[in-house]
Amino acid sequence: MRPAANESIENRFSSLSTEEKVSVISHGVALRLSEWKKRLFLAESKVRHFEEKYLTSLAELDDTKGLPDDADHEMHEDYIMWHHWTEAVQKARKQVVDLEAIAAYGVQW
Image 1 (spheres, rainbow, N blue to C red):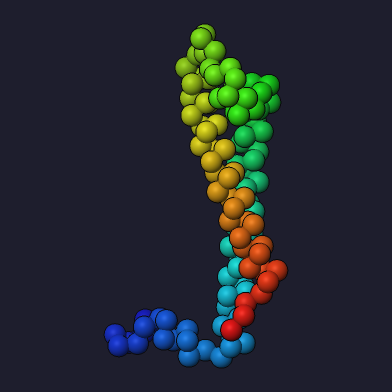
Image 2: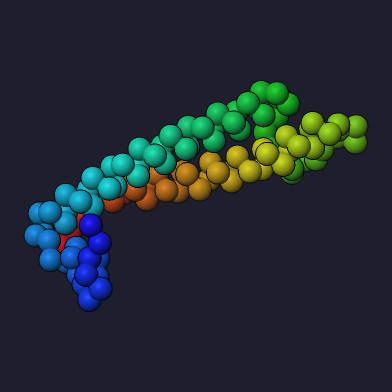
């Protein structure tokens, strides 16, 4: 159901009771937290896969050794994906921490 042209979604939300606003936001936080925890689990498992495959961490690879001179095409592709998943872990961790803080603090109106 779409709001009338002169009534915004924000106005409709604002018209809800305090209890209903808190409920909507709390449920939304719970859903988003669950989604971000799943993303974090996936990203961490991908990073762990590369660490086990190459017996090193990405930080160690970047900081000390770098890619070996004889790195093949697969390792170069893995290296790019490893960076991607490491960034995904960092982003997901931040989202989880932020959403957990909101969930722990609760919604104040």
